Image 1 (tube, rainbow, N blue to C red):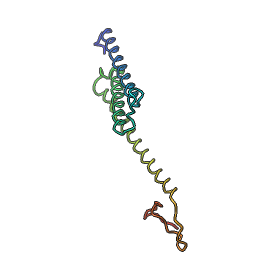
Image 2 (image 1 turned 90 degrees about the horizontal axis):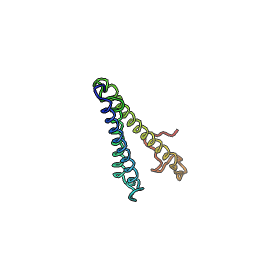
Image 3 (image 1 turned 180 degrees about the horizontal axis):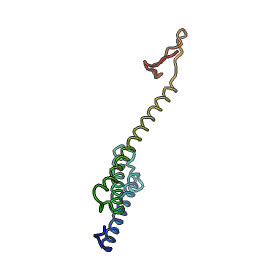
Image 4 (image 1 turned 180 degrees about the vertical axis):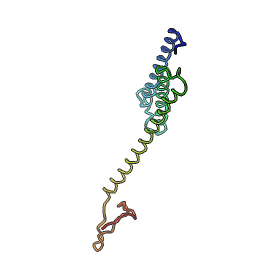
Length: 146
């Protein structure tokens, strides 16, 4: 960064701040329009609308993060090896967030199945054999009753 003059550095910083402000305003507008506060139509009721709004918000936030890293953390002016040693672990963080969300969803599904089994009723109509169950009792072939 030493090759830039003070005025050039100031100009780049001001330009970057204005770009970040514009992207932030765009994010807020997308959120307000998407939820129906502006325009009166809520796009988050449909999966496609919510997905488009979510992807737009993620893309704009990623753009802001990359701009801040490259400009204000001076990664644009560093050698490639140092920049990659800082930026590549960020991909691992994104991977970890996706993996934790997927794992949490699996646990939620498992919890729902267990609660469904706990709510199911056992049919005691057959007085001779107390262990006759309805089909909706959620017992599988690997369930043993002692």
